[in-house]
Image (spheres, rainbow over the protein chains, first blue to last red):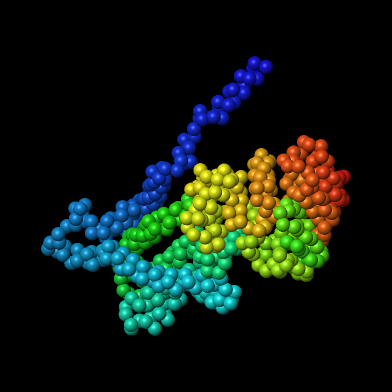
Length: 318
Length: 267
């Protein structure tokens, strides 16, 4: 009897807090700095693999033409650094003198100006997204509420959504090419985002559990009050993800349009660097585009969604 | 007559063909009654409750309240669901006050009414809590307060406690019993649990397996409250109603599970 008691006590202890912790147990914690540390380590690993690949393919073989196509992470990092006008800080910029002059001049021409082009892209993004949301959001609400609108406009939106936004570019150039140099870009951005916004906002409202509507109706809510006090707030998480999808479509369409329409912006830089044969420039710009996307996501949509999830009690599901 | 169902039938048309859920059900409910619908699953008891609430309309027949046909949901006939159906973006207080806004009640009166009903379900301290911060039983109590706050003529309850654990359910039975004795509000309560029905109701109506018809009614208005299932008279009543239900449950087993009925079935 005594030994049984003893055993159970031991069992309790090992299942309690004194259980030996795994090395990776910090993954379960929620603090932001473990996330940052984990991601930094992951990025460092990726860079290391990239550097290793560069060493195997370029440095070891001494193949110069290959080196131009497959730059090392250091080269790409340098490009970004210089592109943000930071070369003065690192002492990388040498004042041109004598015979070096023409070469430096070409280098200066080639080097991207990221702040200016990010600014240009962001202004277009905000304009295009604002227009697409201003049109798409109310239409999405209508599509979710009216069978007639759903079968007509909703169906049209779904059909047009399947058209890759880049397919709008030729028409955009024909129609708006002479209006203003950025007008075609704006048009493509709006078209790329609008239909996704309509479809996802409508889905967000349609996915509201009917139970909420029934609870609202039995408690005397009807008409506009049922819509604005029950359905719309109940659909808010879905609507926000709809707006987020709309934003990412706007961003993609914008990049595609800038790539083709010669008028500045991050997408334009990709094409510009390709023409100069600068793989390091192209890769650097891709990284800048990704980081910009992440920043908007983390700075705007993530906090809003987190707030909603907290209010709805949806956190804690992992 | 307060509430009257005249020859009410309901047919559902789905992919599996048409289903006769209710077959010419006639029923009268007096003001102040606590009526329980008991029946095997799929017998149409919830459907009838939905029709009383106005969420669905009869395929045939009529439902009248105070001699006027029931058309659509109304705040006079508030329904409570198996899920609490609280609005997750509102705290408990705002949930309880939701229906009062429909009644266009002035703000201070609305607040005092909301507080009164939260107090009635012993949740005054949780007025500012979001629904997800409450336990299942607490949520259902907020839902009860929300339904009663608007002072409906009828409270319709569609298996409201089916998803709760036994202890919480017992507590809520006591609370609902108290509410009914204090307010003498007409309550229609749908359940498949015979003990629950006998504990609460003044009248138990047993439905047949699909197509749902009224099989038998039991008048329990003579039984004193509180009713404990340990009391012989209550236990005996439970046994009688359960026996009535057993054949119907067995029919459902044959129909839905392609099985021969197990001995006795389940009550």
